Image (tube, rainbow, N blue to C red; front, side):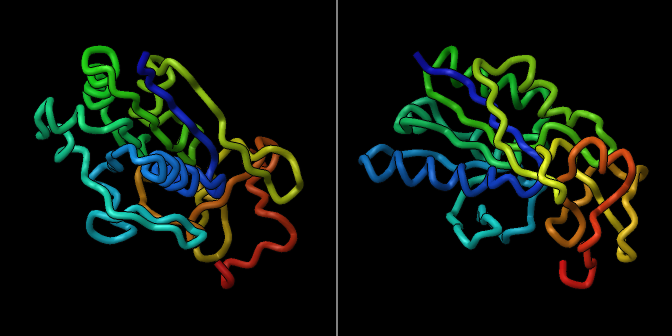
Length: 195
């Protein structure tokens, strides 16, 4: 029976690397997959998903997924969605349709909350509708589990206000534990110049 998975974690928890490894494992066994991401995410180039450790693979955009026929969709053993926090609730409901009606497993990877600690719309819908939730863990500079995504400016100050979506990676975001996120503490060895 197909299921909808939401695998979430803070920045730097290797969510994208995990998505690319899952895709590789399916295809190594001769099973076709679709790698998908929202069109909003342009950091890795056109129609590409790339992890910080150097893994990359071509993908399609979510709006292109929605245009595929039932026959084209059912040729896939699994659909893998990266950056799922950027989905809308209606797009998550489309994934529910793929799972419940077409019986295609869907694995979503993304952030749970933004830099202010608020849920992203896609993440909120997935937390409610997913069959399986799994945290992809990483650690704060202090060694505790990182739960929050801190956005920082060029001077190294942790930001708590601004637009929800500002695309960036290590140059603007870091995973922190709750204590250090609340305190705005990026750690004694943090150097914004090396990011």
